[in-house]
Image (tube, rainbow, N blue to C red):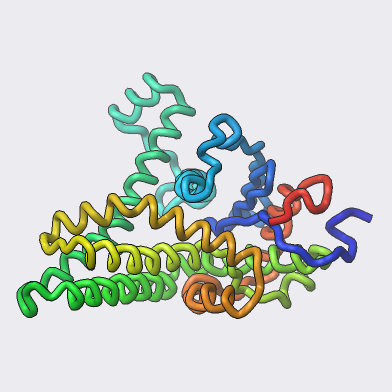
Amino acid sequence: MSKQNCQCPKFKTMCGGQALIEGIMMRGPKKQAVVVRKPDGELEVQEKELRFIKDKYPILGWPLIRGVVNFADSMYNGVTALMYSAEFFPEDGEEEEEEPSKFEAWLNDKLGTEKFTALITTLAVILGVGMSIGLFFFLPTLLGGVVNVVLPGNMLARNLTESLLKILIFVAYLALCSHMGEMKRVFSYHGAEHKTIFCYEAGLPLTVENVRVQPRHHPRCGTSFLFMVIAISILVSTVVFAIWPVYNVILRFLAHLAMLPLIVGISYEINRWAGRHDGPITRFFIAPGLWLQNFTTFEPDDSMIEVGIKALELVLPEVRGEDEW
């Protein structure tokens, strides 16, 4: 009887994943797998061995530093997997492959296919991070500047206004995404990913029936982590600006940028700690993130669950427990 088909003790796994376009990416301690259900119903599988930069540079695995490194790595691999899944679903009228532009052809010729793909993925990550920073940090800072006109010199009011704006914009963004038709199926695959992880952590055989009854909200979800980043940014910036008052919009934004690596590092450590422990304090920290998952995780159908099971099985270690969180 295989390790996936036996009753095993409960534990918390470091395995985790990401929802894609009609698919799921799963990452284990040594492997990553992408499973996509193609338009013909068949499953397309991509597997690769993981190499961690902290193995070459141990300092990058230190607390606080590792949060920034892992976040950047997750962003890059997530965008790569998302682009891969999108290849199987061309937009209407784009079934025929378009001819690359002269600039694309020149880059591909100079860099080679792999380096060209890496460049495009890196640019996509930079663009995504830039848009997130603009939406969740620059926009609240800009709108918060109105307080200076109404209540000049009132730093407390300025900090409170920016804090509320950060939370409202983040929640509104998730709510808007949850109502987009294209995103609903992605969020259903997100639910399948969570349910599959829960089933595995419960020590149950990975079957559709067992996965279906699991919760769809998981405490170690990326949504929870992003909310933690917003919350920690509010606390850190409030303390910093209380000690060092800055009213100019550009200078405040630059200060937010300078604090961002520390904020991500602290958020990662808190999320990591909360994922390993159960109790009142843990439940307090994870409660907002779990609530926000109402916007980003939907109930999956059985075909989505099958994708989640396949992806997880491909990354599980040979020895049970090697992936313990």
